[in-house]
Length: 362
Ligand code: NAP
Image (cartoon, rainbow, N blue to C red):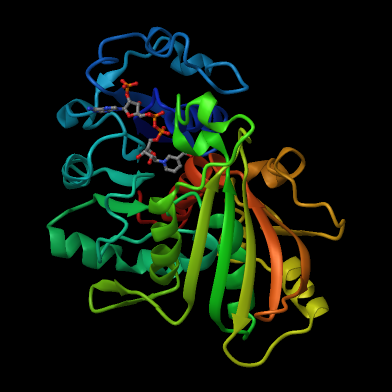
């Protein structure tokens, strides 16, 4: 690529926004040129806007330090400055829907971390290795909404990536699944900053993520669905029961999964072979953020662990372990992914790369 695409970040001062800046700092295709947040940050130099609340383990990228943060609601200001807008604003749902649609209507490719549009029928919920074909809806999305060059795609809740790739690999290999029970242990960074009060979390587990449980049960059906008639028709063939808990881990969501196959069952060694051999379009296209391999199976009895495995594949690979027979269903395993990387900014950047590779962003 001779010329980099100019990109902006809405919610650039927040936890996910900061991750975008960190991950895009040396990106071969994208250059951050536009930062926006709430009216509280607007007009400030980025370093001043995040003073005392820069949470990344890398310094603020040099190119962003003296950029002036804009008010995200001033859509006109961003026009002609960039073509891709990553959205990670914390607002009520109707305001997010209005804001993101306004950017798409003005010609931006909007890739959102927010949940507001995940149930919208013509908006794909992307895990690029699984549902890259859902991007085929974009011409219809543009036609239905009267958008010329703009588009809107979202990424799923950060609770589901640790098991969606492993289960999809099995389905794609010819082993459909009928039922799943999932128990997650989710890191504090998933709640933004300051997130859960330390007095609630230290020496404790918070079993209060009812919202995440609902998303974990609903979003997989859309991701596994098909594009038909100008919308994404969910595949509801898997019955899912989820338990989601917040634990005192900084980054890295863990999921313990038991699953039942709909028909024939693979042997355990075949499951491992399928996971280790899995790859998809992002790997074939050699997208810059695509992890190779996307699924890492570890034989050790005490893996995966957040501290040791969350950065695998630059925080984009899913690490799986402890595969064994299940006494109730067919098999069980433990999955892990980096929630703010694969589960948030990294997953959205991979989606943007796929949009470029498929020429939906020109
Ligand atoms: P956060 O740390 O609280 O950051 C929120 C961002 O939204 C800040 O940049 C804030 O700007 C901006 N904002 C607040 N009010 C605004 C307004 N009225 N207009 C424009 N911008 C406004 O939250 P976060 O953890 O980064 O999460 C952001 C979004 O991503 C949320 O919808 C969240 O559900 C989703 N998400 C988060 C994760 C995760 O791992 N944390 C994962 C997936 C999805 P100021 O600094 O100026 O207030």
